[in-house]
Length: 205
Image (cartoon, rainbow, N blue to C red; front, side, top):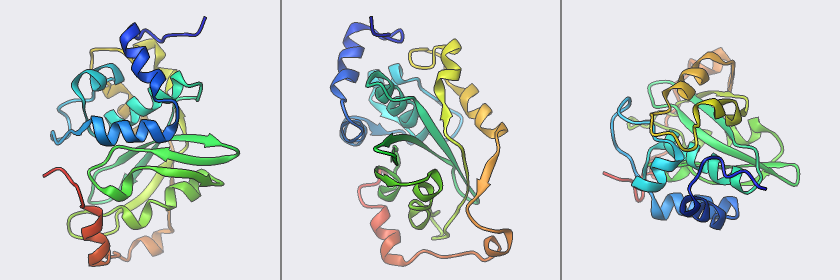
């Protein structure tokens, strides 16, 4: 019998309908509002996201990972680290040997990626020109390896009513790879104004 991961029948029914990465992203975009709470207020489990229909990037990533897991994918996330900006989480998946990603973000360019990237680095670098702060600085600097959230099954990460702070704490302890050399990093790069404005289309105010 297929594992229900502690989900109620009604919850499992919703996840089963999210039968592709594209459908998971569409659900996050259209059915889940962006959580504008300041850092440190909530870190909802997938069950709570489904109930509250509210998520920031970490909550959205955990939800997407749970949805993909129900479909038979490993629940993998990649941590993106930035300077003078918020970090970002991706849910990554592999199809026909290529990587794609699902993400919840207030910036339009930091969401879905088609599975066309040969490596995680290639996938991550596709986010670089869209990853910026409100001063227009391009801020992406490091990324982690894919982390399988099955390692957190002991805390019932898919269904717990507790906040998932422990996952974020773990991500801070693992190695991250640089997206550029220190010499290149010292130059602060600014985003083109048109791309800046395009990335904010539809952003929650």
